[in-house]
Image (cartoon, rainbow, N blue to C red):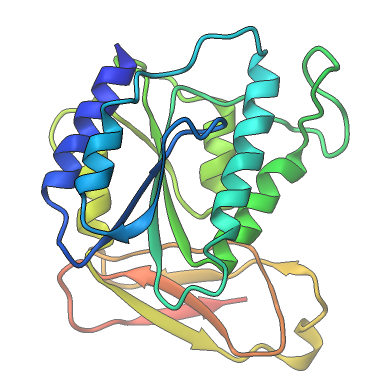
Length: 239
């Protein structure tokens, strides 16, 4: 089942983790497993055995999505002010998307709006979190609207767990092995407290940039992106 596949995938990923890396593990929306970030993998390996997939219940998909997004937002909020990027792997069988900014979706018991997604984009930026959204259902070839929305607001893309060649977690480990940190000074008129879009164009094909909407504040703005075996870095920032 998908729970076993996810568990085996994470276990394989942990085998390649350095003793210097901080590792955490948490299940959402209910933190049945909750291992805080700390060096070493022993606690995560032990807790991993308790993960079996989605817990049974009568909660609707809309309510589950809302609760998961709120729990993820709170978790990422704990990374605010981090000096170095944190790689976050999000495994999910699917999330309900919301194309409406204020309307209720589902049965009326849960209020799921676009703000639930956009708020995650803001807190992930403040915490310098790089999210990898991984479709966890084995054999699934279609991607849920909700997972696409989550990847979109955090500057990423949806990866499938069951693929040939390089796996999703192997790709995440390779792409986040090192990074550059670029900064720029916005024009004073751009510091209006509103979300703005930053685009980065890189001439080297082996590089990719992780960018997202962000709020211009009083300090020079920074955006991180990952290095993949190159030493020179032609970059063009577009506002």
